[in-house]
Image (cartoon, rainbow, N blue to C red; front, side, top):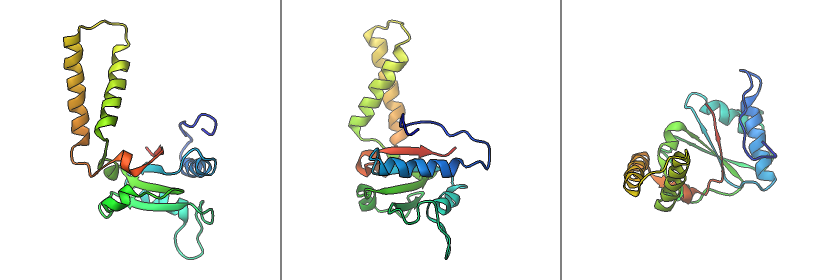
Length: 168
C-alpha cells in the first residue's frame, strides 16, 4: 500500500486490519501523499475506529496519540455544519459512517468526468455503437449519477478529501 498508494487489507478477524489501516493513513499524511484522508465505516464499527485512532478515557492512548494528526469525528454528518465540510483542516483524518457518506455528492464537473470514464470502460469491450445508442446510454448513466447525488448536503470536492479508506 505504501508503494502503490492503494490496496486491500484482508487479514483474518482480530489480526489487525483497523490498526494497519490507521498506521497506513498516518504514514500517507507524514509522507505527503495526502492531507485530508477520509475513513468510511459501518455504524457498528464507528466507535471502535475512534477508540483505536485517538484512545478513550483517562490514561488510554490511541494509535495516533501524540503524532499531531487531528481526528474529525463526524459520524453520520447530522451535527456537521456546511462551514466544517468546506474547511476540513490539513493534517486531519475524518471518520464518517456509511450513512454520512451517502450525504456527500459530486459537483457537475466531476459527474461529467466520472460519466465519461464509465462510458469508456463499458464501451471498450470492442463493440461499435451508433451515436444514437451511445447518447441514450450516456443519458441513462447521467440519471443514475443524479440519483446518487439526490439528498446530498455537500460536494466532496469542497471537503478536499484526497485519500479514502473504506471498512467493509
